[in-house]
Image (cartoon, rainbow, N blue to C red; front, top):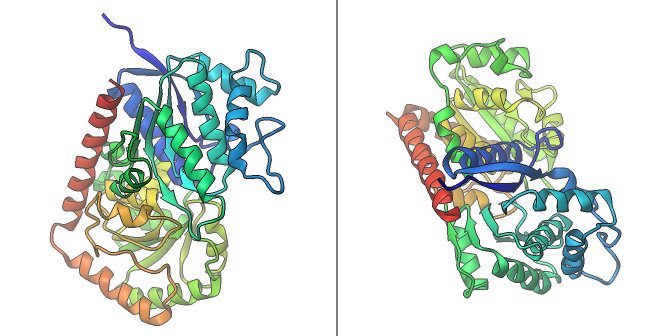
Length: 403
């Protein structure tokens, strides 16, 4: 009998990141590897080694692109005696396993990012150490407002992808860009790993119990909403930079007034640290606020039992769909939200909306749309089936890819 292969998974950890998406999709991918792909995860490389400096050269310097350091950093990681504790941690994690599985997530956006440099250096170091490398569940995208570093970022990303034993994106738009930029490097795409959590979605009346272990961290009024019969709509943030809090506030205030006419409440769920500034701008309005720090069980309970979700966040929208909650997508910093409309039936409009910038006019339009989608027969079942089909596809696809 062939032994189970062991792998090191590049992932996010809940204790170091508030981001719901990074936490949830990493865990979902880990479940795919352990339950479906006959892998045993023996080590992880997480947020401290992606977000924090690894060595002396791992810094920005005037007149130089951060991508100039990828090979040097890879060599430092693969050295027999790395010079810093973090470099040694990464080397130990890679050498402990048969292979490196990289949860690419949102790192492969082509711009000056040290997180991308570190990820690629780890991938190249693994190859130097003789390990297969699989990049899965990844975006490939231009950044908003392309920079002068584009050419070098394209080149270094291409060199890294060419060394991989498999490259698999999380959306078709990323694969299309890959084929444009790197036509000689084989690649494919599968739905986001988070869809594999679809079987865990609990949406029966018995599961809607407030003040339970599942609702830990939700404000008291939100716990009552989750366990009660009053409909509520969840709003979330965006990865876009430069959102005007006052324009956001005025649009949300008008939306809340429209929805209040039929007894529908508003909940703003911050799913990452930048959303806190948006939440603060809502002070004094009749909008409940959920902080990003809540456990994923509480976040899931909130999203799965909402009447609808309006969000510029990619993974929270996927998470909502697992419970059948229809979602309307708003603008983000890449094609990720637009591309999600090609992957799952949102139950709603098939186009991305501006992020709460339209004031009362946009608010009235959104309120009408909420009413329409809530009145559509069978929409929740349809969204849930779409999410489950994606979950089956990604679990099987990753298994096939690694085999």
